Length: 352
Image (cartoon, rainbow, N blue to C red; front, top):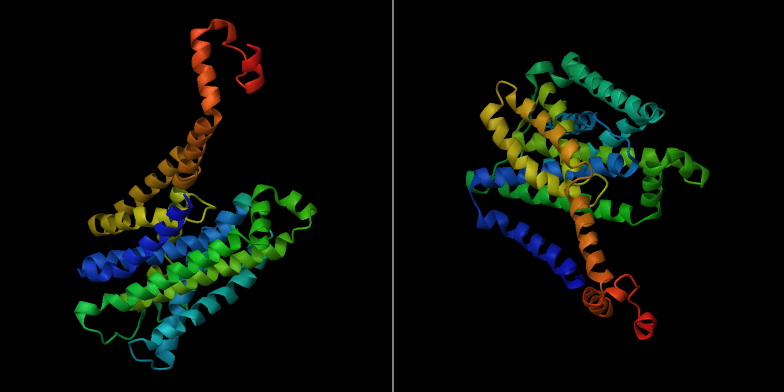
């Protein structure tokens, strides 16, 4: 199993690096870019909500803040299209993280359903601000970002590799947190926050750190997505579908796991693109997505990855419970009723 654990990710990474050259169709690479973006956003969301158990449905606020940050920077500094706007992606994540500090200070004073409601309320506050602060955001007319000068046949390639790099960075951070003392504290908060506090875990600082880090990834994803689309307006930047999407991806794959959000994005993002193209004009896509969310919660409450892990654990347990001597004893008990109910260890076999 150890060579498989090493070779498997290496093969997947090699396939991902070669993908735009093996499948140069722009429609295919576009879906791949969106998949990487939402996978990075879902992993970032999982850093907080998955590891702490605090379900946030307001991360679209950070997504929109990152998008508007890049758009306003390009507009104010007259930045041309090309690779230069990509250098400001960390700035977009930093601004989103800074906004997450006061927002987290307010929201994290509550728990459970109250926390969910507060995050939704904050999201709608930022959406209304984007509409009403027309002097900054240009209102419903939106802001256009600079057009990259790349030709149509390679237009998607830079965005593909930047989104892939963002995904790998999110996976690396998630892996590090999962195997660190900080991550153990977050998992302890998820299991029993009061008990974790009594054991010395700094619950307030841990939750705030995870919340800010999660907002940073959402802001970078929003900025990159806005630059790829080419324009930004309030209903796109602060879209409730974003929150539903990342939460559904994490829940489908396995909330609180390392690979679960990635698996959920690979499965659901192409489906979302199809639904948007087919039913995006009349809201049917949102209805279908909501039904799918309920189905996942009811049928796969722990997600695909934990479910498969549990099944594999049961299979290994059955394989290891019956050693060769125990298997021979089980077969002998079927032929000799006198020893059928005796434990099949070595000393008792000699006694029989």
